[in-house]
Length: 304
Image 1: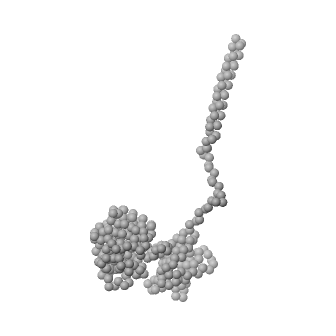
Image 2: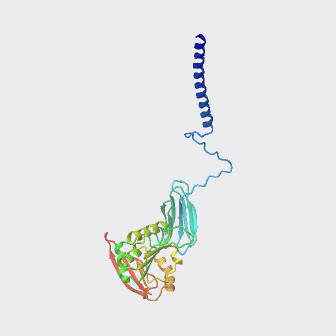
Image 3: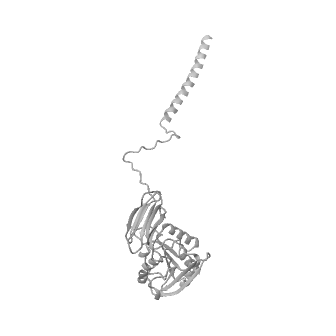
């Protein structure tokens, strides 16, 4: 009886020991298995930079200045926060100066006996041109590219003016309307939507081209119009029966021999606000349009 009690205790201790040993083995096995697995919430240390690791240079917004006059222009320029004297520069005819900058710039240029000061917004293009009084002026430009002409800054043609331009040209479904510097595409979209004409917009600014294609999509005329990103002085106008444009006088003069050489007889050219020098004998119509704010716009019609 005493021996039975002893063996009974031994069996209980054996069972307890077996259970304890089993649990210890399971815990150790689990721990060993987990030791090689990554901690899911552990942050990975950033890669250490070595001497060979290069940080890409910061891209600064660029101010460009172009000379569209017939003579070199001397001007002075400095950062807007700089209290020192500005640097003097001379820009040749057709040249473009580039100024990457973190801030706006002050530019000074001579007019008669005075130095005119303007503040140039960073990231914007500008052009020296002659104004209506043949005085030197600095205007906002359309781009700062050296491989393409800057014909005019982007100023949308009012819809009332665009409609009158198409009416004066007598646009119909047989026409192919080219708009030079098409901006948001409003003229070629209107020609396609109202008259069923085909349209081609020439534009350099990619943002304007996105707007133009979106406007064509909204109007449901995508199959009738196309928009090309190209220099208007290098475009092919041979298929155009109507050309519309809202440019500056010197740009009209620059494009005149190109249109004379490429357009077929009978093609019409409609110019907003500025006539085409040298085409007085081709002028077949003139009209003014007063828009909602009382501003008066001129429209010139020519025929090849």
